Amino acid sequence: MNAAERPAFYLTTAIAYPNGAPHIGHAYEYISADAIARFKRLDGYDVFFMTGTDEHGQKMQQTAQAEGIPVAELAARNSDVFEALDKKLDISFDRFIRTTDADHEVSSVAIWERMLANGDIYLDNYSGWYSVRDEAFYTEEETTLRADGSRVSTTTNTPVTWTEESNYFFRLSAYQDRLLALYDERPEFIAPASARNEIVNYVKAGLKDLSVSRTTFDWGIPVPGHPDHVMYVWVDALTNYLTGVGFPDTESAAYQRFWPANLHIIGKDITRFHTVYWPAFLISAGLEPPQRVFAHGFLYNKGEKMSKSVGNVVDPLAIVDEYGLDQVRFFMLREISYGQDGSYSHEAIVARVNADLANEFGNLVQRSLKMVARDCGAAIPTPGQFTAEDQAMLDRAAELLDRCRTEFDAQQMHLALEAIWLTLGEANRYFSAQAPWTLAKSGTPEDLAREATVLYVTLEVVRIVALLVQPVMPGSASKILDLLAQQGRTFADIGTPLVPGVALPEPQAVFPRYIEPKN
Ligand code: ME8
Image (cartoon, rainbow, N blue to C red; front, side, top):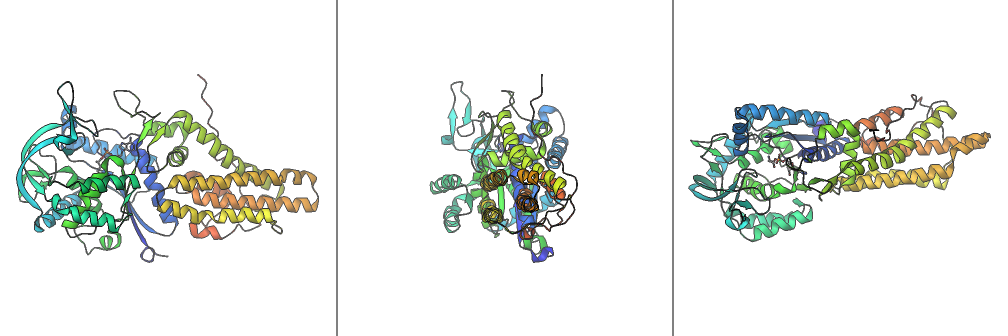
């Protein structure tokens, strides 16, 4: 099927501030979004998957000043580090957008002009609290005065400073009813439910107009016709999702095909920007809001927040080198319930690598393929009549695709993996109970025929599981499919069983155990 005949699916990650190096929270977001993008492609969708960097704003300008380098240089240097991380994590993005890209300025100016034309932008004096770390405005009630006289944002604990400026405002207050109607008509718009409830309550409490330009620094996109103002960084940042699909050319093939976005994947701290400001900007501009925003949880180090001062920041490149890429991808998606906070620790990752990957999956692949090499002429065995146990095992594996679809469509990747691993557990029990090695030892023609059937059924389960884990562990799944001499690798191929007699390459270990280094 060519792309035009397949259903479109537009998926994005948040774009990170490149004011420093990426941490494992960033890696977690990219890996989870990538698994969804790969799943959809394998399931026949024409996917456009975008990630990138959010390069404007006061935080970037201040970091560059502190480092004594031009801000454009800081942005370019660190944006390259994020892009290199994506490549190391095997993230299958279709575009890596930078908000300093030329087409993004055109797009940001266009959305501004549309909001202005709709009467939603006006000039006024702003006075209030601003957190540079969060790039967010706070009302006095949203801040806390500390004993030392400093003031912080109550929810994020970042310092706020008093700001008084002549700013452009966006008439957010006028959008309360339309936003509540949107949440009501489209209950799937915000997920998970905890995020949805929080936002509904927040909007019900009433919305204030939002300051959308700044005049005290110049690292941003100039407001059209008023070059002494730059756009508030979140106006330009959110607009990246439109730039990626050809906006402002709403007649372009990309825009027609991919807007509205199917899914924005973000972290829980930026839900308000994506589910209140963003749909309001879009409605004001006469554009469709995205279909769904999913806010994932935060990743902590052994339950503690990672911070440079505590010295417990985990470098994603280092853990990939230590445990292997697919091991890290699997761990993050299997261990943490998507939408909830999770914890990273050496012990937890080693437990998953050894129990789930090396024992449950790797051993089954290795043992069955070795017996096939030895007893079945190194080719896919020819099965005899299936027993009730054989059929139950095959049926169980065949049911996995529907289950995984349901879970991936709800962004519950951990539940898809749980279902797959329950089936692998069943396959291991089947293998032990059928004891093909005993049949081989006996050597009678009936027992050898039965051994071939048991091995065939086992390899069928391995094939289906390998096809289904491709989105999570692309490299390892591809190796297993090579060992099974499989060409057809999309989900449409799940229904085509192994062909007896096809020659197989020499078996190789795919999931090594993690062994603690001796010190
Ligand atoms: O928020 N665990 O950029 P950012 C999991 N530029 N996810 C985490 C995390 C953690 N410990 N820490 C951060 C921004 N994240 C804006 C986005 S989008 C138009 C603009 C997530 O570099 C965070 O929630 O601070 C966000 O989704 C992403 O990492 C980038 O965060």
